[in-house]
Length: 156
Length: 156
DNA sequence: GACATGGGTGTTACTTTATAACACCCTGTC
DNA sequence: GACAGGGTGTTATAAAGTAACACCCATGTC
Ligand SMILES: [Zn+2]
Ligand SMILES: [Zn+2]
Ligand SMILES: [Zn+2]
Ligand SMILES: [Zn+2]
Image: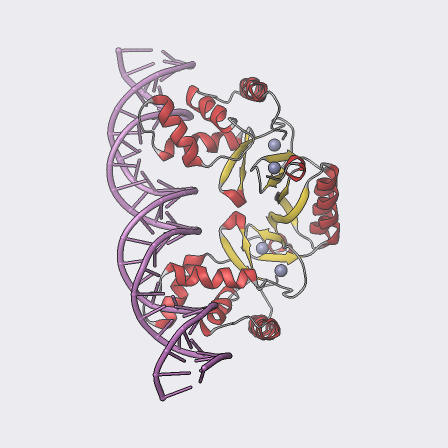
């Protein structure tokens, strides 16, 4: 993700879509859950649960408990609004909530941004590889570490 | 992995190959590291560091420290003898040490086995997807959850 | 053999990440 | 207003991973 984009739009869009999706499904996007979603979206870098917890505590002026955040994150992941990056123990906002997809990420080692892609070729290759071995795919995890375009162009 | 295979062969082979590879590279596969490798290979299910630690402690009659295991695992991963399964915080023996590859896994939700594959199609698809976005791949992670062939055939 | 070197290991303490158990409270329903 | 069920707060605890420092031991040098 370019460092030069209007991120307030990303956040606003994400919240608007979340409101719509949850309303449509009858899922309860409570004030707390919505605030956690907003904190996850504070950047395109995956954020750890305890980092979010700190933000939340600061916002509220008093210390929140880990479970508060973990429960909100669990809900958000279930609703497909947030993805968990396994290799980082961290969470990032979904770029296309509502669409059926499992999440494929290009994670930059330099800037930390995790770009979500939904590449049909990758999905198809995994399905083919699994099918050839009689394996039934339920949830593919693809997390690619490397260097994003802008960090290659502007090494510091 | 079929439940019906002579797993002692898997273990023996893994240790033999590890001896050869480390000798060839001048890497020191010490007694401790070799024992940890053997414990990782005790099955085809990824094992957590603390599970290995327990085995090791039992073997030695006294409690070992976590660092002991983590350091051995770090060495084994560096040498490509063991892979870490990010989505499980666990470790599994490499099926093809010596070959250059990054590790792709089909992890069965039922029996827990992690079958390592090195599917060229998956690798190529990831490279293509990344290249199309100007992303330079360093370390791809592919961990597919689902049901292995034998667990589909013999649901319990 | 004495000695310096460096990697490997042991030990203690600690941090980070995640979950269990249980009480309370809000919201909508009858 | 009583009730049921999901959401939240609180406390305690488990699981996973790391830092700092001392010691040991194999190796090579003099
Ligand atoms: Zn997504
Ligand atoms: Zn970058
Ligand atoms: Zn391998
Ligand atoms: Zn299975």
